[in-house]
Length: 106
Figure 1 (cartoon, rainbow, N blue to C red):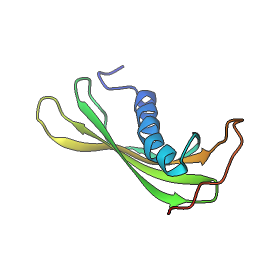
Figure 2 (cartoon, rainbow, N blue to C red):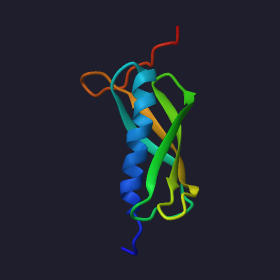
Figure 3 (cartoon, helix red, strand yellow):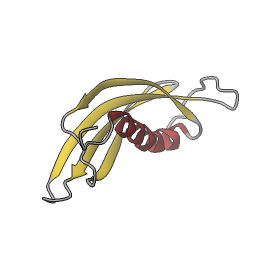
Figure 4 (cartoon, rainbow, N blue to C red):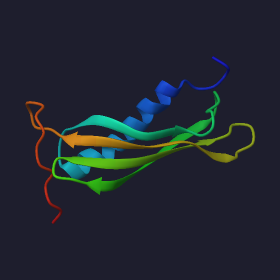
């Protein structure tokens, strides 16, 4: 509305970024079940280059938590700024959409 990117779009990009390591670690399908501690630090301006970084920080029996940071490279100044961060919780699911155990690492 004010020349900044809509927060819902940023949230969806973060969810996509977090789902990559989550599905690899879960060895299959996952579903987002929660977003904890989401923070918007700075706006993202139209024209900024946006990058999301995701790291698994906790693995449970059927769920895992991924910490995601989003950074923006300002178009005009080339400055890199952290714009958002949050913890996304995913659950491993089977073909019927039911939770399933996450395999042990070998």
